[in-house]
Length: 110
Image (cartoon, rainbow, N blue to C red):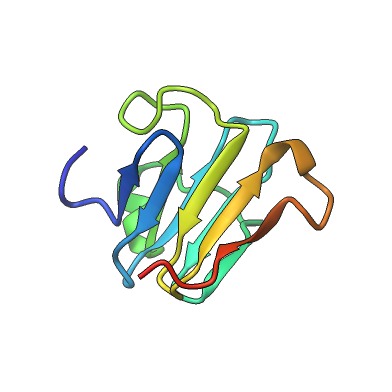
């Protein structure tokens, strides 16, 4: 992983958003909903994915493919996302469509 990324991976299933200028788009395989990590928390990502990294940068996005070799190398059932709003969110892909899919795990991790 290079230093020009807008995120850092930590442990086996945690992504830390580190740059306010770019939002992260979390992609955990084709069958799961995409999540946008902003400076103000998490929200569903309903737009089309950027075709390449240049287009993503123009839209102030960084796409994080969870299953790619430079991230975790496999899709995750459980993912923790530390957002710039000071909260750590727990994303449980086994609970898609319920209120337990995304919830605050820690109110303040800093």
